[in-house]
Amino acid sequence: MINPLEINCDSLQMTDEQFFQLCQDNRDLRFERNSNGDILIMPPTGGETSNRNIEISYQVQAWSRQSKLGIAFDSSAGFTLPNKADRSPDASWIPLEKWNNLTPQQRQKFLPLCPDFVIELRSPSDSLKTLQNKMKEYLENGTKLGWLINPKAKQVEIYRQGKEVEILDNPTTLSGEDLLPDFVLDLELIW
Image 1: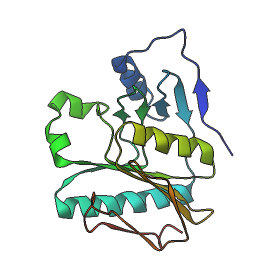
Image 2 (image 1 turned 120 degrees about the vertical axis):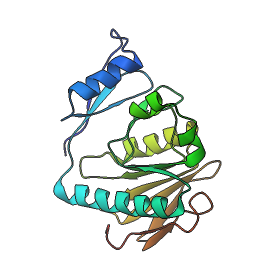
Image 3 (image 1 turned 60 degrees about the vertical axis):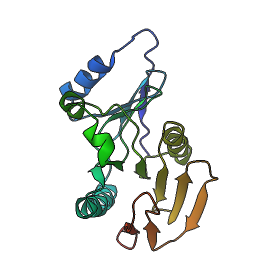
Image 4 (image 1 turned 180 degrees about the vertical axis):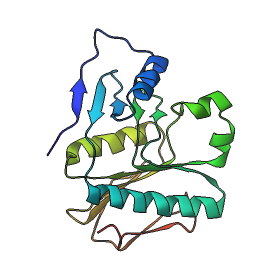
């Protein structure tokens, strides 16, 4: 297991613009930044995880395109959360109204908002506790629905605003509930 490399940046106060530029200058690396300003360099995933992730992103995008209710994003999108963390969920979605409220300049950089819907897919290099904390961070910053998918355990943790985490063992589908009407994620292709 290769863990993310965390760089303590206490002595380096990087602006949002500088962090964005660092990411642009090093496109072969995948960065996130926690709310303390520390930089996390994420290891690349293996082929199996990458294939699962593209399947998830494809299903979210297909629903989003058909419903026309919002905009879907893959794992390369960056979001600057209200707590100042910069995160890149494996798949995410925001309502069209949020997208339309962004300026053209904001759309070109890390989006200054928290997605309403996020999916994190656990890869062999991911610590479950770290991902669970990330999901809680999304909720604290405005996410309404989040799914933490753990293929190895065939388990899904569902995170909702104001509710306890729900854990499902070996589900075949997940419902987008009221937030993503008529969206059903087929997990048969993920397991």
